[in-house]
Image 1 (tube, rainbow, N blue to C red):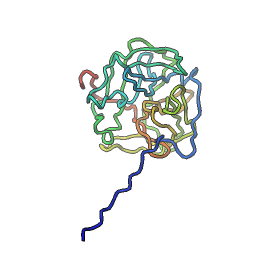
Image 2: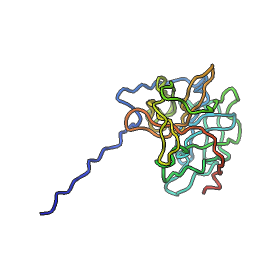
Image 3: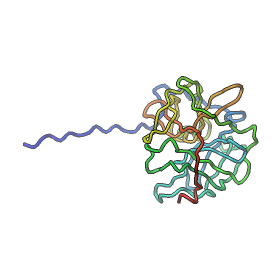
Image 4: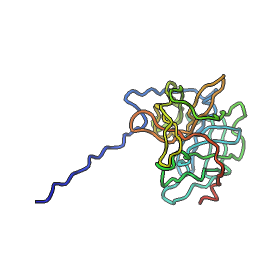
Length: 238
């Protein structure tokens, strides 16, 4: 007799990865910081993610939002738009992307190994805000237990910003290559990719990382905004 075949139990991906059993998100206004620095990163192929200003004409988002799996290339910069403070079809400003930089350590075909570098710096063709409408980037990694906030344009609330405003850093973990990432327990699902993981220090909103991964349950992981010694433009990486 042949041995019985063992069938692996398939666990379906949740419809809203990153959201726990009790959804703690709530809608926030986009008139003031930190949310006024956030905008929708929108491509002419229909892709949508979240991004945020770190300078009047510089936006951070997740690199995987710019990758086209069908072609095996990144999207052309001119086909990417940033709509700052987007809310139900209205926005404070609009600009196209002139070029973008992606850390050379990121490989969209090997996301689990290189997720710590899953971020993109977008250089706009015109300012989308002012210095006072931009967020400050942290110089160091946060500590486990630090209170943080996360908010963006998520799949179930695409027209408004929703945020978990009472979550925490769980640990500093590593991607498959051993590079640091920030594990958090913020409720956030698809569409929040590219959103800022925020802390409030000394009267200022500080960005500690860029949202890139969602857990099966509550929480996910952010790529730290750490200095990269050598970066290439999108044209160099095609």
